[in-house]
Length: 103
Image 1 (cartoon, rainbow, N blue to C red):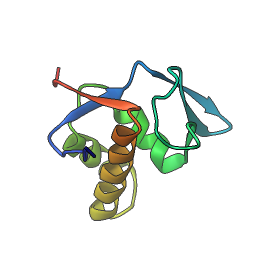
Image 2 (image 1 turned 135 degrees about the vertical axis):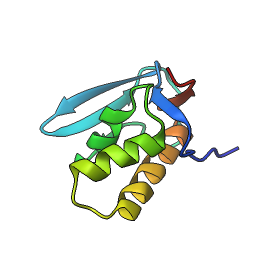
Image 3 (image 1 turned 90 degrees about the vertical axis):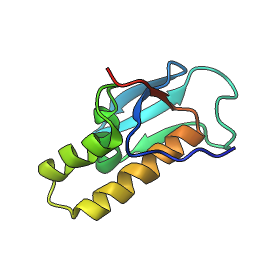
């Protein structure tokens, strides 16, 4: 079953991955074999993905993440919303983030 990210949900990085910043990008590496079902298990996040990843702290809903990013960047809110939902849905699919209860 493919899960999609929800605006009122809160997410954090999975304990089954490590993330490292290398040359202004974030590389997410599974530390548990078979965590993803894709050929290339590593995921490299660009500046947009990095900004989203850094906001997945277990406190803010995705709606809050979008609001925060909208104030930080000059992109249209609709574009930011699409980027956030798209990336978090992909991270969920790869089991690189998990949904948690808001703190």
